[in-house]
Amino acid sequence: MARKFLISTYGCQLNEHDSERIAGQLVGEGMEATTNVDEANVIIFNTCTIRENADTKFYAHLGHLKTLRETRDDLVIAVGGCMAQAQGGAIMDRVGHVDLVFGTHNVGEVSNLIKQVQRSGKLVAVPEEPAPSGGDLDQALTAVRALPFTAWVTLQTGCNNTCAYCIVPDVRGGEVSRPFADVVMEVNELAKRGVTEVTLLGQNVNSYGRDLTGRGPLFAELLRAAGEVEGIRRVRYTSPHPKDLRPEVMAAMAETDAVCEQLHLPLQSGSNRVLSAMRRGYTAERYLEKLSAARALIADLAVTTDLIVGFPGETHEEFEETLEVAAEADWDSSFTFIFSPREGTKAAAMVEDFIAEDVVAERFARLIGVVERSALRRHQERVGRDEEVLVLGPSKTDPLLVSGRTRQGKLVHFAAPKEAALAGAYAMVTITYGARHHLLGEYRELIAAPRHRRSIPVAAR
Ligand code: SF4
Image 1: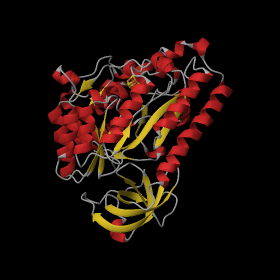
Image 2: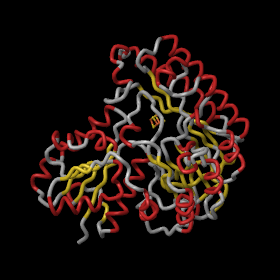
Image 3: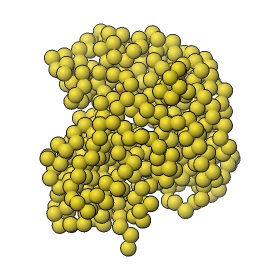
Image 4: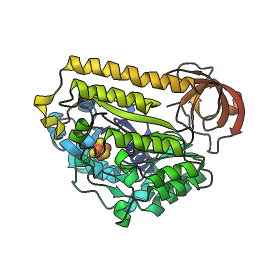
């Protein structure tokens, strides 16, 4: 019987994709994925360190495995990802039943590290520098992806920015771009296998290629090249940094049919003083200028953002400025977070300026109110339109419906005939109802049947 592995992933899409690459290595070793902790021979936690409660949740999960580990000599418990990179061997000191700690720079050798643990016992492998990226393409191609028709493609690792609240540059290092040809080859290969939608991933995608050319970024060229690959109907990307969003990227979005009308543009705060304390490198005015330039150039553009409430020292007036910018920006949705200090960051040291919890909670509720109003109105404005929807699978809440995403990335639920209910199909749907976080629609016609082989069970995500 095949040995089994279970991967538990925390955090962003970069981590999700790292988990897919690790799964690819283990499947290559003849192992099978499982969701049952009791039958797993290898349990891997791919951790995140962005938010405080992620640590707490992770250590709670890890704690539950103590008894299992004590009764199973063959079990390997491994911890990787950003928290492992930041904390290294301290994780093993704190939780004695962990067998392997690996960092963000050695995701590519996890199966070998596990073999080493099985041969010689506990191991901490957390190099400070990224490994040479020569093997990345092979690894990317063997990744075990959650859905067979949509795929993440990593463009770069690390980040050269120094946002005061963020630990990513410390744990993932500076920006390292993958070779242009490798990325395009990966998209080509994915398309041959039936993938029709790719999402290009990086911490700061707009600066992709700066380190390759020594002159300027190559992201606009890459968007065009990915969009021209035969079989790819949709190209998305995340995350861009507002200071690096350039006119040529907006032009590439507007002129490349496959690039979706969706832009995630994280504002974080509407106060220029707070933005400067955050070391974001732009002002609220500059942000709004870029936003309106993008909207002017790209028809029917959906824009989402990230906001942080209660950054140390944020005054009442500065928060009011964020409310004003939020009203003006009129986003389609926002990921709104309460500031949470991450050890090792500049913001974590600003303890004297931390804002009282009740004040932050009140600000958070008010900001959510503003962003949800614009989200609801924008969704209601879509009622009556015909939209292309990529079917993801059965609805999680109503078995009579399927769920899918429009080009703008909006979740739509609708009743579909058999041929259009297949995950990976594209359907034309008339929007009949708009809520804050989803749309409802009525099926019109099948645009395209799935291209991938349909042997893998799928569910909406
Ligand atoms: S751009 Fe800022 S928030 Fe994003 S990864 Fe880099 S340092 Fe962190």
